[in-house]
Image 1 (tube, rainbow, N blue to C red):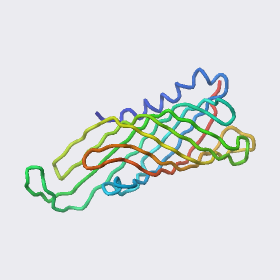
Image 2 (image 1 turned 180 degrees about the vertical axis):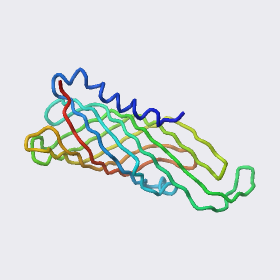
Image 3 (image 1 turned 60 degrees about the horizontal axis):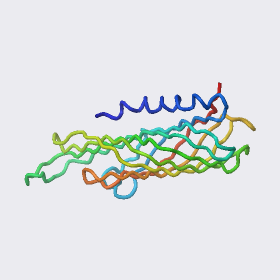
Image 4 (image 1 turned 180 degrees about the horizontal axis):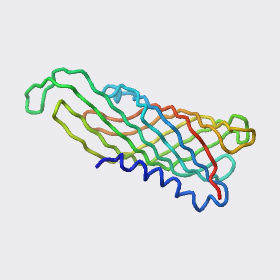
Length: 206
């Protein structure tokens, strides 16, 4: 299954969730571009920074500081290694180029805490926990194929919200996150990465 086909429905779902709460004016949508750097043992297999990612959330304010909702994301990791000699499972050797391609789509319950609501610069901390849709392939020359699995995901993050005008509700998000993603396939134990994101935060109301 190609999980890339789920990206648009996943993000569309964010717009449907706040429909009931939007009338009250306490729903907020965040949409961010995200770049991610593999860390730990994941970096031994894919060392390239992924500039093909984004994330978003639909959150409902419980009060002026704490909000809860749903977060989704997408990140595409890719690494092609130079030709060298590899040993196949049947004991034979092959000289080939090794390619690792991994796409992740985390879908998580998310909580966000704003430390200084109403300030010119508003720092926040957030935590998301949930599932992870993973599409992966490892090609050794002409050998290999694409597979998919479902895993767990957690993402703590911190950043700032900067309103476009004093007291405004529309503004810019800038932050960093750490994605925790167990994996254990094709010799890779996890898909952990450090992310940097920037995007827009807007209120949803009718």
